[in-house]
Image (cartoon, rainbow, N blue to C red; front, side):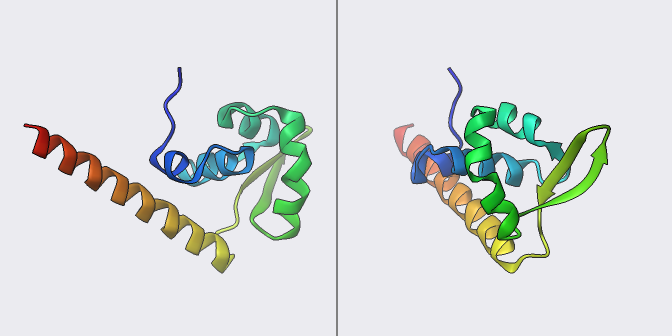
Amino acid sequence: METKTAFLQVFGDSPMLRVMDFLIVNEDFDYSMTDIASQSGIGYSTLKLFWKNLEANNIVKNTRTVGKAKMYRLNMANPVVRKFRDFYWETTKQAVHEEIKERVEAT
């Protein structure tokens, strides 16, 4: 059984949030849509349902083409993406602090 990140535990486990979770945690690299779907734990056909929306809103950007595969990553030039990333890491930080506090109080 896979464990959910702190962000997914707080805000729910939807396919789009799984993709955003994956792309934020792995923002240093670019990935094909197949890799994004696989690593996010969602189906490729599910990813295709909302991928055009992510592209249209400049959430993700095409970085290069490798053979027939287009590679994508988060568009860090988009201020909304930067704010969402900050929100993601702040949520994670709060959850970690709460977990540490609970463990210290339990001992």
